[in-house]
Amino acid sequence: MVQPTLFVPACPCGRPARARGQCMSCYFRHWHSENRFDGNRERVLERDGHRCRVCAAPTNVVHHRRPGVDNADDLIAVCRRCHGQIHRYEFIRGAVPALLLELWKEQHPDRPMQLQLVA
Image (cartoon, rainbow, N blue to C red; front, side):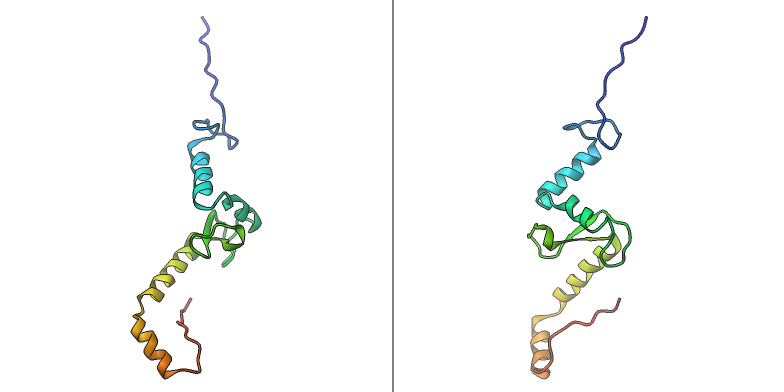
């Protein structure tokens, strides 16, 4: 007697589909793009050639240049290493006390206020 085989639909990536015709990995990636990047994540990765715009390493990470703004012009593809550096530098900038910045401006009124960061 021949056992009937079950038809398991396949995701476009080739893995078995589980949710809405996609494997869990593709489904999560699509959900993440829709909810965190207003559907622009894949478009930005395609635009940037799946390469980090800083160091040209292959990547699948997209960074918001302006937090909360999800249009493609304000998103950029970066690798995990560069993405970590971006957020580390943001923390450093936020860690400088406001009074210290004010005192620096008083001492250097003709210079733009900047924080020197080494690569």
